Amino acid sequence: MPKNPLQALKDGAARGIKFFFEHFRAEPEKNSLALAMHKSHTPQEIYQSWLKNRPDTDDTYGDFATQVDWRVGQEVAAEYQSKFEDVYLVKQVQASWAAFAATGNPNNEFIPHREKYSAQNRQTMELNSKGCVLSKDLNTENLNSLRYVYEN
Image (cartoon, rainbow, N blue to C red):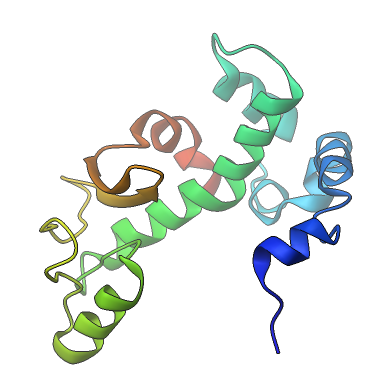
């Protein structure tokens, strides 16, 4: 049986995550599939280009690692797939899954109406402490500055 996520954290399941980011920063090409596959620029060059006016801190590097290895890749994949099929990113948990399974569209009475994802609108749904928030171009700056890592 899966553990309760909060109990797992309480029991130390996330122990070592700071070490992971330190290890990622020391050898990013060994810890990042995206950075390992991109051959035109070194991981340090990619990071410096992305960094711009941001402070070079561990937290900022953690944001970079999240962007380059997860968020930007997800958005690039969604953009490509949206040319062929309807794409919806994050769903309002069970109601959206049920609506999607029944109709192929995650819209339901519990979430704001959302448009299909496309390169033109990049509408994403974010679940956070404020609830369900729809945004357009939420991650555009990161997407634009790191897209070339995936399109090499």
